[in-house]
Amino acid sequence: MERTQSFIFSSANATTVSANRDEFSVTLDNPITIPSHARGVHVGVYNARVWNSVPNIVTGVNDLLYLTASPDPQKILTIPQGLYGVSPLNTTIGNLLQNEGYDSDLITIRGDSATQKVYIIFKNTDISLDFTQAQTIGNLLGFDTVITSASAGEIIFAPVIARFNQVNSFLISCSDLVHNGIPTNNSSASILVEVPITAGANSQINYNPNNVLWIQSDHLISKSLQHLSFRITNERLESLVINEDWSVLVSVKFIM
Image 1 (cartoon, rainbow, N blue to C red):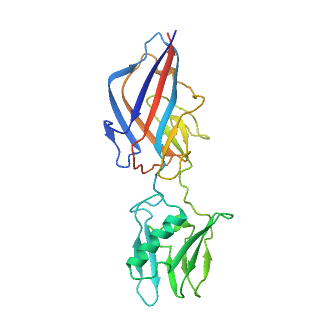
Image 2: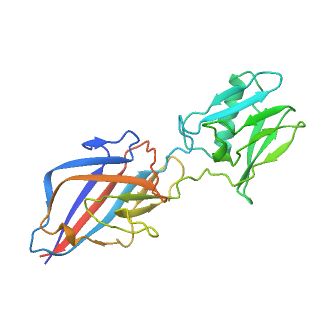
Image 3: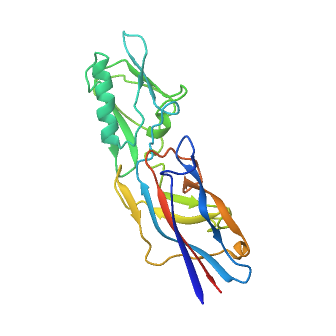
C-alpha cells in the first residue's frame, strides 16, 4: 500500500527567515515520520510559488554611477534597489540626473538586441562615467573602464554583454528531505526542484509541473523530521535577495 504525505512550506510565518529571505526554517507541530518498515521513500514537488522580482541592482553592492560633467566635480548617483531592464534603468538615471540639475538625457542608455550589449549616448562633450570604482553598475552594463565623450551625440558600446538577467531559473533545496537531490552538473546541493521563470518581471511564478520528478530518499526510513530548512538560489547556486515570500508544496510517498 502506498502512502503519501503532503506539506506546504513557506517563508511566510516560518520559524526563522534569513535577512535576504532566501532561506527559511520551520518547526513542525506534527513531525514527518517514516516508519521503519516503509519501503521506497520518494520526495517530489507538486507546486512552487516564487516572485520574479530578484533585484539586479542591490543597495551597497552595485548601485552607484560615478558621473563627471565638465566643469562640475564628480557626482555619485545612487540607483534604488530593484529589478531593472534597460529602459526602466534609463528612466531612473534620467530622473536622478534631473534631480542634480542636469538634462535628463545628458546620458542615454540603450540596448542592442542583436549583440545583447548596451550602448551609451552622450548629449555633450567632456562627460565621463567611471566604471572602475567600487559598487558601480558597470558589471551590469558590461563596462569596466572610464568612458568619456569626445563629441556631442557620441555613442559608446559596452565591450562585453550586459548582465541584466542574473537569474535564469530558481533552485529550491532542502538537505533535510533529500541528500544529493537533483544534481547540477557535477554538484549535489540537495536540490528539490528547478523553477523556470515563466512570469514577467515583478510577477509571481506559479510552477505546476506536468510530471513530478520524484527523488529517492530511503535515508528517511525510521526518521522523524521536525525541523526543516529550505533555500532558494539561482541556477549557479548563488545567494539571492528575495523581496516577497515564496513557498513549495512537497509530497513524501512510501510503500508500507
